[in-house]
Length: 418
Image (cartoon, rainbow, N blue to C red; front, top):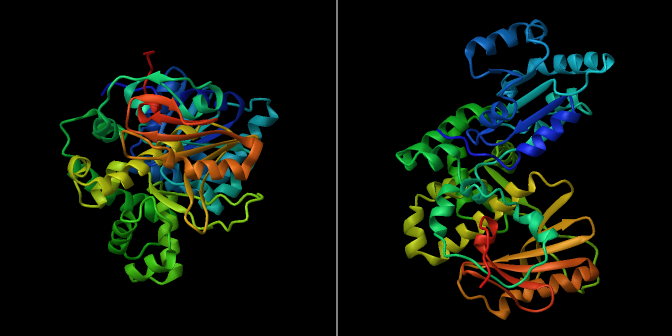
C-alpha cells in the first residue's frame, strides 16, 4: 500500500528532536506505526507488543527487556499500553540518559489508548513524555495537498475565490482509516464490524473494566443517533440500562480509545445578558464508522436523507477540526450556545483571537446563517477575528465585516481565481 504523508510528521520530528520520550496515540489502525517507521526509517528499531513473544518477555522482566534494546537508535515500541509494568523502567532509562546529556530521541511509543486516562502509567512519566495524537486521514491528507485549514484561517487574508467542483461524498468516504480509504476492494461494512469487535476486545478492556461488551455496542448505537447534539448523560444511561456510574465509565472508555470525542461548551466571561449551555457536544472520530453504527449506507444518506446527512456533515467538519488541531499548540475548541438556542457550531481560540465556524449543508448560504456568529462577535468584541459558514458551494464570498461563506473544499483544495 502506497504511503500517504501525514500532516503530523513535521511536528513529530520536531518533538523527537527536543524530548527523550514521545507517546503517539490515536485510534487503532489510523496509521501510527506506519508514520513512525516512515519518519525515522534509517535510524530506528521497531517492535510491537501485539507480538505475544515481545508481550510476554516484557511483562516477565521489564528491566531486562528495556536493557536488551539496541543503543544508538530511536526505539519505537507499538501498543505499549498492553504492558503497564514497563513504564517505571522508561523513567529510569530517560533519567539515566539525562545524566549522560543524551536526552532526546530515545523512545517513540505508540498506542491506541489515552495514557493520560491511566494514572498509574502517566504518573511515571510526568515531565519526561510528550503526547501527540494521530487521527484517521483528514481530507487534505487523502487529497495529498497537506493543507491545514485552521492555520490558514488564522494566518491568511481571505478574498473572493472560486474553487473547482468536487465530489463531497467521495471526500467524506475517504477521510477515514487508511485501509478502507486506500483499498477500495474492501467490503466496508465487514471492515467496520471487525474493527469495532477488535477495538472492544483489545483496547477498551485496557482502559476500563467492561463486563458487558454487548452494552458497549448498544451505547455506541444510541450515541450515534445523538452525534452533533448536546449530550444528556442521564437519559442515555437510562436507555442503555446502565447505572450512571457504569455509563460514565463506559463512555470514558470510548473517549479514551478515540471512538468518541466531546466539544465543551464556550463559557468565557462576556457582557451579553444571556445564559449559556454547559453541556458538551458529542462526535464520532470517524464519520464512516458513525454511518455504520447508524446501520445506514453513507451514499444512501447523502442522496436521500438531508436531515441525517446534515448531522453527518457536521460530524465530518468536527473531525476535520480535531485532525488539523492536533499539530497546533494552544488552540482551544468549544461550541457556543445560549439558553434561547442561538449557537455557533465551533469556536476556535488561539492566543487573543477567536474564529467562529457554522456548518450548513446547502449550496447557497443566506444572511440568517450568520446570526449566531454575529452574537459571538458581540460577546468577544475585539478578540473576534473571523466568522465563517462552511457550505457545499464553490465560491468564497464576504457577508459583512469579518464574516465569510467558505466552501467546504477550502479544507483540502487549492484555489483558482475567477
